[in-house]
Length: 436
Length: 36
Image 1 (cartoon, one colour):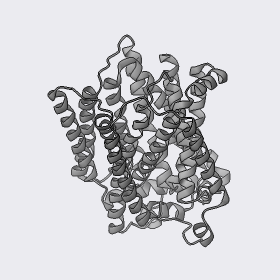
Image 2 (cartoon, rainbow over the protein chains, first blue to last red):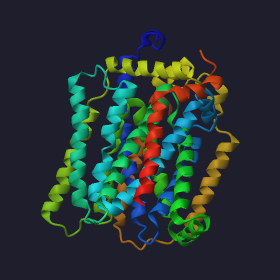
Image 3 (tube, chains in turn cyan, green):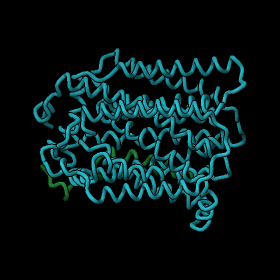
Image 4 (cartoon, chains in turn green, red):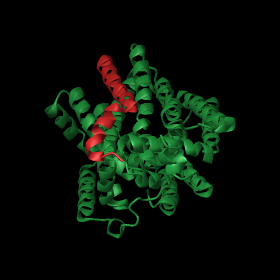
């Protein structure tokens, strides 16, 4: 292999710093939005099967993922990415399948061992992500002991914090099938940790995250549909479940829509700071989920002072872990190893080097083509946006107001915070990379 | 530079990274079947 510096010039230090800071912001924004996605599902307390809940969220995710990218950059970019790196379509579909199976495993893990034990087990996905990042994508090479300590120590702190939080915030402890539950939770950790291999592969190759997620949803929706058919017993039983649940479909699809915003930020984090740092940062979603639960849904109301102390302590430990990772961003020497991995991908799949280099720099390889960037919205984009709008309006019309009590003013305040995070992070992404 | 359209399939199958998520997916489905 040729020296990477000869084919992919070293990224300017100032540009690298900017991209690293952007990746950290995106990781934290991902945590906020992924955590908020739990809120609409908390409104659904009727007897809908968990697999159907998962399927409905994925339908919301699918609609959002084909409309948000259309709105942001247009589908023309998706076609360009597919032509440049067709192999990544399969990688993205595979990642979507992994997500769907992992998500279903978590449902069984919660059923068998409870959230308090299951959550920290599957949150170990970040540790696996660090391992894959190091082994396959040359992350943390020549990073220095301080950054190693920051990333590994930070991920470990987050893991410990998450254990404290879930024990404090959940009360159930079902038994009887402990082994099944533990295996399911660990299986979810392995699948969710491994799912980031395709993510990193795509972004080292230069694919735009908005394109990657569009293909990801095909695998996700396809696999989730197969699993839902399998678990409900076929097309007719599944259809009956959907009809029976029509009054809550909107809330579940809305949860999926919010989740997509978080996932898009997660993708940009994986692109700009790698999976060893991006996954732990987006795992701060647990803090946000807890915040929604406590402040909006009053989940810890009437609890003892020691429980509150446990929650505050766990949150602080998690936040400290996230901060340690945020301050351990890659330096030029480590980034050269990322370039080496990118060059390997380019040579393995015959991907155009300009495309790969532009992706690493957070720029578009097609920026010079006026047609593609200037008139990037086509009629197809507007059709997809219209379909999404019609589906959501239709679901809203048949939706029933949730019977679950919640603190509306607190929800409004948190929503404003979420929108502010979206606006600030989105503006930074646009200014720095034009969503590349 | 390789011809992308002709070679990416074989490159994919030769990519050692490809088999890690594929094996993980198969194991996940096996676990799912087992815990039902």
